[in-house]
Amino acid sequence: MNQNTLTEKQKELLRKIVEADNSGKLPESSIVHTMRGDDVYNLLGLGIKLQSLADLDALCDAGFLVKEYKGSDPQYRIKNQAKEAVANDFRGPELQQIDLLIAKGQEVINNPHEVPGMPGFIVPDPDACSEWMSLSLSFLTRLCGQNHPYIKEFQSKGDPNWSIDSLKAHLGVLKAVHQDLMQGIFVQQDAGNSPQEQPINFIFQAPILNSTFIAGNGNTQINVHSIFEPAYKAIEKSSYSEEIKAEIKAKVQEVETEARKGNAADEAFLARRLRNLKRMAPDIAEVTLAGIILGPIGAASMTIKKIAEKVKKEIV
Image (cartoon, rainbow, N blue to C red; front, top):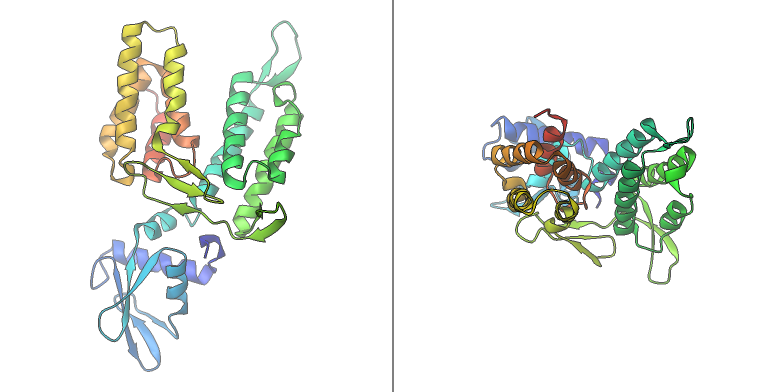
């Protein structure tokens, strides 16, 4: 079951469970104990009575709880994904990613560029536009496959570098995909290229060590290093001296090493390293932060992304 198919009642139940666990109201940390009595199930520490365990089982199917038996009544172990889902209001990684891309696209539209020597000829900023196009196309390809109609539609909208309207058309494709994701239904292509509607099948592994995730049809694997490759390339192409390049690269490598720890990363340490990078090489820091924030789904944990977003907004 995809988390977007949960009912509002089931989401509210998970919110109460996570809140009770965070406030220490549960008899046992991260465990929801049930007790059958008077034809209802009592959720101990929550003050909630359920006619059946169907909603709890649905939360298990969505990957937020794990059903276990110790005695006659089942208990439910709360997974870290449950707390992340509640914290992000049940917006999964794919929705968070496309939200960022849509916001970035709108930012490019709102900050056009006048072509030098051509007064009044307004176009999107070429560097910002190219970066956004590359990230958006990469995201769509990983999400739905290279031959998907959305890919063809996205590529058919003309060159956005010379037209605000073209850029808006590209953004419109992302918004259509966003709508599909919000509904929990996505039109994918099967082996015979016949479109079919089915829930999105994302399988995520914790972004630790190899930080691998499998998306869509399972043929795409991405690791943490991929989101730092643009930064390393930018360092090589920069005008810094070789000595300074080596120092900058070392700082980026420190950030990458910490990012591999996922949600277990030392937040203060990572924030300091990003700030130091921003002071030393603002241009490289910008590429590094963009890679973390807008990079492949699952390559950086939400903790890492939030730190990057915070540092990006800071004036150092």
